[in-house]
Image (cartoon, rainbow, N blue to C red; front, side, top):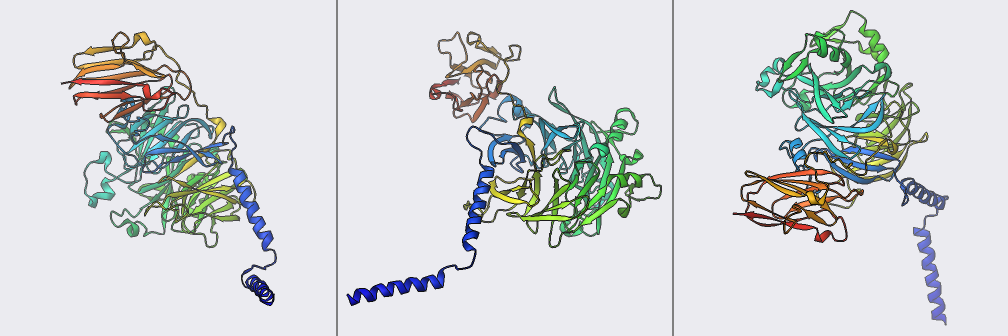
Length: 623
């Protein structure tokens, strides 16, 4: 009994010591834990979209060197689509069918930085999205009815359109300033002749929304500076575009040091409307490599430069169109410039020039400088509906909220980590929503399960609806998001199927009309795809067989006659490295040379029905 009593006392004493040594007896700790749990629950509730309901916003994010467009729903942060733009995509057959193969022009990658949604009166209209390709000097249009790339055009005379893409407030133009200076047309010229022979260029493209086709209206020739980011004016500043520059030193090597020598670089202001009028009716445009090119120094009042902190990154026009904000990058300040003050300064005659461009006085155009203590590496500015600006801070890994009319810093919140751009809900329009902002981070640093030496990039979802910002969640993202735009979901009107059009070239709508036509060494198959079979020749013994000779050029013109949404058929030829898809009601063409003899199964590569496995046929290639 005594032994039991002593043992019990010992156990109780042990619990008492453990409690004294390890328990957290800090007053309020229970409340803190409850508060933390409540916050997590609240954050989870904010991003939860119940079954049967849908997200309030689309977020269209650039895919960087993947050349693709990433589409997310907000606030859930669920990725809902990858849209191939500049890069072939075997999953959908983009770049394999005739039309998209021709659009890509043999190129297999793109470097997509900045998406821009078409606008009407400075507001997103949800019709098209435009994408730049820094790597191969191209611009693309994505049709937001179908979320398919509609057109791609090459941009001659360019050196990487990094500073675009952005649209004027009624999508009159899709503007694309260059990053790298080059001799016009990419001709050879020694770097010793850099200042004389190399040029910066802005392509001013038009997009015909009915025909879904690009054209280059004119190009602007500029000094051989590097043009980083840009934006179009709104309302009272709607005729202007603004661009940040660096390397006004004309450095050609060791840029990290040599392109950062001066205390100031420039924001270039260009009146696109004056230049468009000159391109249309004037005599000062010259044709270079088939494109009208204008030197704005020849058109009075069309170009000015404003000094700015050296090596700036973003420049963003405020929703009211009255100001533009430059982010310093190497100088930890945001500078607010006034369009009205700039216009007043332009009227004065006493102006110095840089490379023949009139330079406006900094102190006469600058409205205010904002320098939040300890905030380092400002890169990009977004806006809400209450007159506030939000800046990403790359080095100090945070977003700073401040008022662009007073300069007052209101709030700061960490990001995880090193944000480049940020995207606010409707943040580039005349009517921002002021609900959400997403930080697009360059790094993740152990935030997610390890996938080896290269970590995922990350995105932070932040609630900006109140005075204080609230970090809600962090999500991984495929490399590398540069920029995004967030648009209200109800602005985008998608089509569920392709409308039946019996006059469409190469289309076949009736099973009995499926046929194979030989023209010399060309074989044209006018076939149909339907649940759950292919019909290539309605009159043949085996309707799902195609026989050709080795060396024949083969065209499969396939029409999906299933007019039900989401019934997409794939078309793959085994061992021929070919695959493409045909959407409901669509006609698509696969073109190739039958250069291998033998027997090759054809099958539907996109699940379409319970008898999907049975949807097959054969390509027979005779020796």
